[in-house]
Length: 169
Image (cartoon, rainbow, N blue to C red; front, side, top):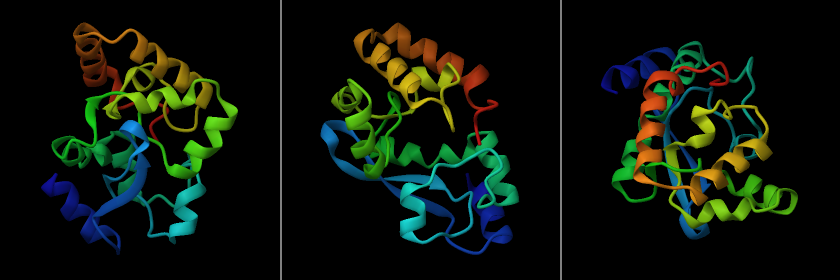
């Protein structure tokens, strides 16, 4: 993490850590941490845009840390603070929570559990600019079928196919 922070600081102006408001357990808002992988943006630009595969906002090093999921490591501090878990549905920005709650049946169920750094949707390829409906289906499956063994399986799959994935950008 120290090496990543140093490279970010040396290759791109702006803060090392990117903080973004997300919605977690019981619909409480919290600041989620990531290593900054994009050029600094205004608050309004950052709130409502998805990251796409060839997004021009990404820095060169940012592209690498996103593909390898290194940018997610600061979320371990969110776990230590009790705002996130290692495993669970990924938290979303308030703008998209409001949008999806109207469009996707059962969307709000994901706020009955602590959000995670990785989850069932992510290890099954539903991350990045993919179907939000499929992500939610996988999140609901996880919530309805939770067990310690499912968490162990997700951790195992994250180690072997979750960190570097074609939809990680």
